[in-house]
Amino acid sequence: MSKTSRIRSFILNTGAFLLLLTGLTIFVTPVLPLAWQSILFPLGYTGIFVLSALHLQDHRRLHVTMAILLTVVLHLALLAGLEWLSIGSRMFQFLYFLWVVVSLVKQIASSREVNRQVIVSSVTAYFLLGLAMSIMVALLALLVPGSYNFEPLTEHDPNRYRLWQQSTYYTFVTYTTTGYGDLLPTHPLSQSLAIAISGAGQLYIAIIIAMLVGKYTATNS
Image (cartoon, rainbow, N blue to C red; front, side):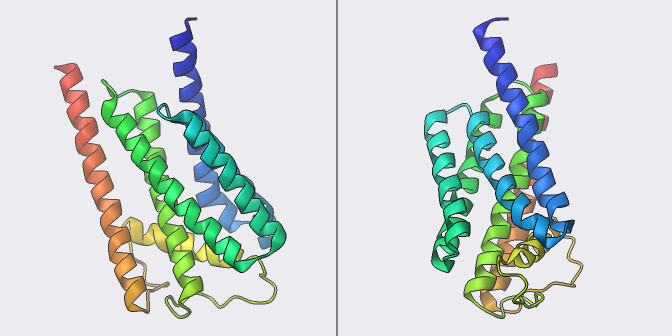
């Protein structure tokens, strides 16, 4: 196997693991007991940081450096229990996820054909964009009390994992424009963010689908 084939296989494998881990973090971890979430959420985010850095082809060294820095800040915030450090860490995560999504979309756009790697990257970027938006929802709920009708935090939830659970659920329901109405934005800021989340979800699907269909048609032509 040539060096190019090995690199391509490595990128494809990391993309598959990244998609799997992202799906587990979004869909499985929130339904587990809070004691498990306090362990699995940090591990899940750490894995996403590292795998996304390894999966991206351009500026890989910079992505790896950022992933290591994010991991250190995340676990330092958990160990120190500092609210301001935790908020700063989440803002940093939001910006990093946006950067990864943009990089994945550029990677998809530069591909010559629609293959398994492109499909995996497309789905992964969709989930990561939703995860980034859920971070913004949780931060707004923390910084502006009463922004959402979320279940109040209790003394038995010192790490606020119940908040991340609710924000993830609310975000993806809004992101997909499902809108059950059980969790609602109750502040002008959160309502504006809801518009941004639903718009981002629809725009992403429209752009990526158009891009994939165009590439598939051109390849078959």
